[in-house]
Image (tube, rainbow, N blue to C red):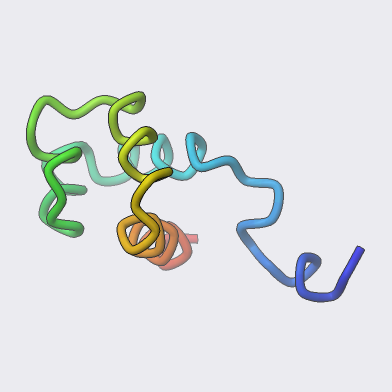
Length: 71
């Protein structure tokens, strides 16, 4: 295992786990206020959010950064 991955707090954490933890922590409304993207504001769901975040690197980076801030 490389040192980069051993020191990476996101290593082994799925995107679904990240989104679920953020929703549990902030709720959909709070998450939409923190990160202003439509998948959190308009009829939000884990499935639709994952689909968007997997295709949109800038949004995924924001979600991962917010997740790291609550660890």
